[in-house]
Each structure stands twice: as C-alpha cells, then as structure tokens.
Length: 277
Image (cartoon, rainbow, N blue to C red):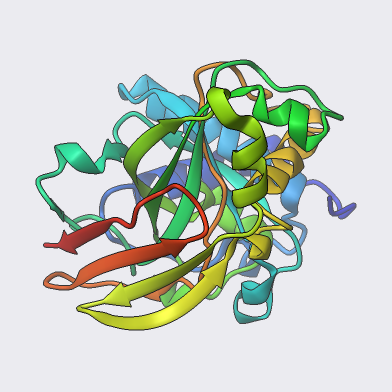
C-alpha cells in the first residue's frame, strides 16, 4: 500500500458520506484523489469499511467480496497496477434464475459488464494456503456477470478512488451453482485453463481466458486472502461468503435494450445471458 501521509479520520468519514450519497442515484462526482492529494489505498479501505457500516445501518447486509483488476490485460486501460477489492451485498447479489432474463440499470453510473467466475465459501480460508487446499474451502463455483459502475465521470480515477467508490461494484448476477467437492482435481485443472467469448446482441466483442486472472480464478482468490491478512480494518473471508474473482474480458459499457451472453470452452460451466432494461 501507499506510504503517503494519511488524511485525517474526519476526512475519511466525509469521503465515505460523499460516496454513500451517490449510491443508487446514478450521480457522479470528481475523484477524491483530485481533491485530497495524500489520499491512498490505506485511507480508501478505511472509507470502504465506513461505507459498509452506513449501508448496513440502512438495512443492507454484506454477503461477500468482489475482486477488481485481477485481469492484468486491462491495467493500462484504467491506469492501475494491482488488484483491489470491495464488498458485495444482499441487495446487489442476484441469481440469474430469479431475474426473469432481464435486469434494470436504473441507478447505476456509467455501468459496464464483466463476465466472471464466482465462488461460494464453505470454510474460512487461511493465509498461505496453496490452490489445492483453497479448493477444499469452496462449496460451489458459478459463472456470472458483475455490473460495475463509476461514480467518477468517464471512468477516470486512481486506484484509491475505486476502492472508496464501492470497489466499482454495482450488481452481481450469478448463474447456476456447481458443487466442486466431488472432483476438485478436475475443477483445479479446468478453472485455470478455460476460454470465454463475450457477446452483445449476438456479436462476439471479446475473448478471454482463465489465465488472465493472475493465473486463474483460484489464484485470484488466494491473492485476496493475502491482501485481507494485512488489512487492519476490514475482516478476513468467512464461511458462507460469495467471492467474484474479476473480469475475464475487457469491461464494456452497457445500455437498456442490449442482450449480452457468454460461451465457455474447457470447463463444466455453461454460458449465461441477460437483457438490460
């Protein structure tokens, strides 16, 4: 994390209130880093904790995490150099089967779509676990879409800004869940090597592969565990949490009326689809 001078706690609270005020409004503000020269990642994760408290005070429940920027092929596009994470909530996580094939973009700021791999944890993982042991902590795996958003105009921000602004999280749409305990060896192999096509209205816009995510989604999960082990403010992962591991392709702007779908090869996860309204 950055070693820059901390901003005062009162400023952390002010930033948290400002971010929270934009939640579900579609509104945007100038990046915090453009107004607080010393604003760094440590400060940003304190903001994230404060925003979580505000959201839970208003009735939401944090049910897991999202990992962002695990796909190194998009770092240059966003001017970042490492992954980050944010909380996901009971009001932002949805099963695709419950949505009736459509999802509303109302209240999201400049939304984009990211095809991802999602894990449900059965056991709290520990720092230092190898990938084989990590797999024993996972109850199920699913393919889904994360809908990301930017409360900063034009998707222009610094890494700390993204953390403070909900980790850019808007919604998580989860496809069918597959238990992995019966064949962890096969899941270990295929989750590190599959490929994916992302389509809009029947046209392939991008192709991705598992290895884009720091070597694979299980590797991305391990990276998050190590980040949280050093975090003095936010909790480590717990049993029952949902973790989405980052976009397998570039993130694309989305709009009402569009239909998006995926096709996967080399893994026992089917493609998914959604239409935005």
